Length: 314
Image (tube, rainbow, N blue to C red; front, side, top):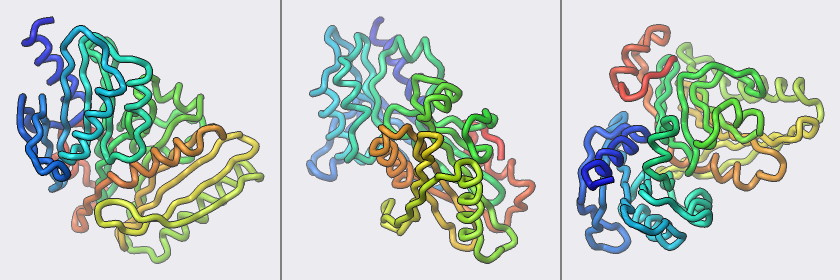
């Protein structure tokens, strides 16, 4: 592969994962910790609902595999330049330890992944960013490292309590496979155009009743955490489905009187810490917009004009 082919492959990989309006090669971005400009091989930019997002690509076009040191260098660089997504694209490959290091970095607010040009050309698109809406509420979510955020899909009927607006799943397996292995998440929006009081409390009660009907032995735990740049307080819930042998973690964002957004992540009993870390990543990075004067039953055109990159049903 010559450099021109590699450059084109990188651009296609970036576009498949990130809604870049523009992408520039060999750019300098300011470092917030290093206090110097950092050289970035490729930087993609997108403006989503008034917020600018940045994706960076570190290019490894040489004869050795990407190792843990390479991944840790990109982790530090991504944090320094405030990247929302960081991709390492390699022509040769990567060690198992390097891939594991990329997928298990808990302390950086960046979606991180390592991919070969061959994997990207052979496999399906695995978007890391997704847009969803319902009625007057829109949301942009970023998948955890190594996961995909797939919108506009049908309810497969395995374990999902509601038809989801977006499914979160490991990028190397399908949504069906993720559901069967209990390694899957989903997002949903509950609009409240009539301003019904106590919507959040009613939603929690309905979901609890549904969980108990599904598994009478279910155990519940709730708490609040600070999330996002604003450090606002968010409501978290844990449901242990003892008979079904999996745990459900859910994060709720109360959007004043407009409605509620929530994201769930489930896992087998052995994966609780990882699942909660992934959900916290989603909670920390999700952003919202409300169109209070939009007709909630006729909002498709409005939202798809705002986010035309990846269509999704409302």
